[in-house]
Image 1 (cartoon, rainbow, N blue to C red):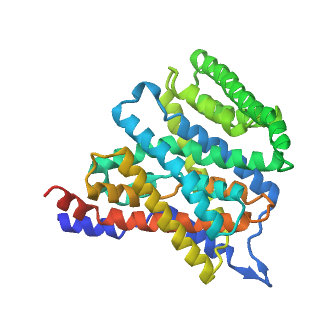
Image 2 (image 1 turned 120 degrees about the vertical axis):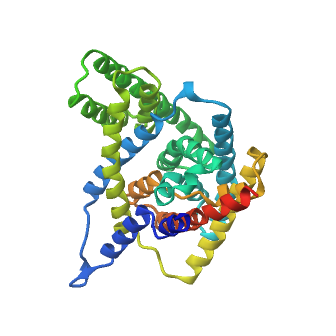
Length: 375
């Protein structure tokens, strides 16, 4: 019976993989020499805005400061070290291997810093029994907002800095800082209004809708005031997730259903839009970058989690699939017309596919891992 269950786990495939592959199939279908599916940029921009707002809000509401413990501190330490290593080592590697500017290399490193173990949790019950699974889930909660915030910051810097001279950079410091201030202010402002509404007039049907509208309104308000919409929604999510609100869990559960619908749409459309080039140089560069990424991740785990066994370190290193936050930022950036952006997005999609496949293989081997780790 046990072996039958193991076999059943191995036959499951992550739904993200199926969604992306389905999107890629539809994206390559042509009719009369033209792609069968062509999406207007206005539609893509609108979906990207909604997706970024809801994903950031959904992830930041899970950051409960009161629930932080020693294990949370270890996960936070792992996340910080991993992101620092990515923004230095992976950035340099991407610059030379992909032959792209440093700014786009930082963008690439920031995007792939996110992890999402929830991608492969449904395909096996055994992974939930491993203690490092809790670590992976906490790491994901911490790094999901950064997966979106870092690339958006890089894009803002690229867009605002018109010259390479020092005076030009200094001139942009104040507007850049103002984006944070306005963003945080907008998030807290809408958060206070939402808090008052939820406390005094909770309605089973309308309150969940109010939360979704508040997240979208926060993003739009901050952007219109010259601030960062992502920072604003991050502030709103942190505020809403850490204050007492009547029936908050019920409200957030319904909000997560809406986010799940975006999850399906984003992965399908990402597969449709992004075309991975079938070139030898692309695959060689991709394999080298992937190896460097896993090496830096293993080093970060070595530094931050010394009590893990070697098998647990390897398991944690390889179990780093990219999820909805990574796909959402790729989807959003697909509307940007910038030299070198295409190769970055192609490589990120290749990373999404490859890391999910590797994580799935590791997950299918979880029963073996448990047996060998307990002996």
